[in-house]
View (cartoon, rainbow, N blue to C red):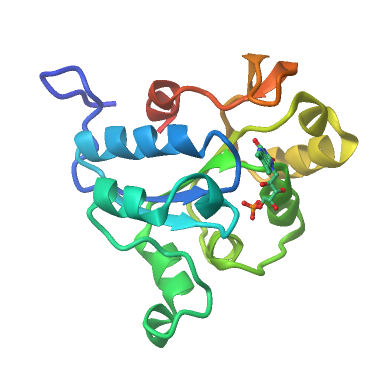
Amino acid sequence: MERTSAGWPDLQQRRVLLAVCGGVAAYKAAEFCRLLVRCGAQVQVAMTAAAQHFVGSATFAALSGRAVATELFDPVQEAQIGHIRLADAAELLVVAPATADVLAKLALGLAGDVVTTAYLAFDGPVLLAPAMNVKMWGHPATQQAMQRLRERGHRVVGPESGELACGHVGAGRMSEPETLLDAV
Ligand SMILES: Cc1cc2nc3c(=O)[nH]c(=O)nc-3n(C[C@H](O)[C@H](O)[C@H](O)COP(=O)(O)O)c2cc1C
């Protein structure tokens, strides 16, 4: 990875689709978005409906300098088949935080919203940053989904162990934005 004189990875003109899902760690995705932009990347953010309960799309729009894709059936975005354009325009798809719900959907190929549909329409490298309660992470349903996603060649970063937002201690914390940046 090329680095700028300031020590940041050089991501000039690299096109990243950042899919934000509905977990507490969505606030860390905002910082990750800021770091990507600081490194020169062109960041397009897509959010699930649940993600917007945690961080507003206006935050990501301001950080990325682009309108955030939130709707599959958006009269403006869908006039240009927005989810396909999102996928076609990206070189890398990062899902952060990746919820148990979205991981299960991606593993199965369900495509009911803008994030999961863009995932199916994208054939480039995928980086997943799971974040959830320790028991949700350890559940066989989640672990089987992860096995499928790893077998598909996707890169998985985290989750890390520690104190979780729900008060439990264990694996479930989303990796820090700097760690995700290194993986990018
Ligand atoms: C306060 C709160 C925190 C949550 N945190 C997480 C989380 O960290 N990880 C997760 O997988 N689900 C979490 N959930 C559950 C998801 O928000 C829920 O499964 C939602 O349907 C996920 O939607 P999405 O996958 O489309 O973003 C949380 C729910 C609430 C109410």
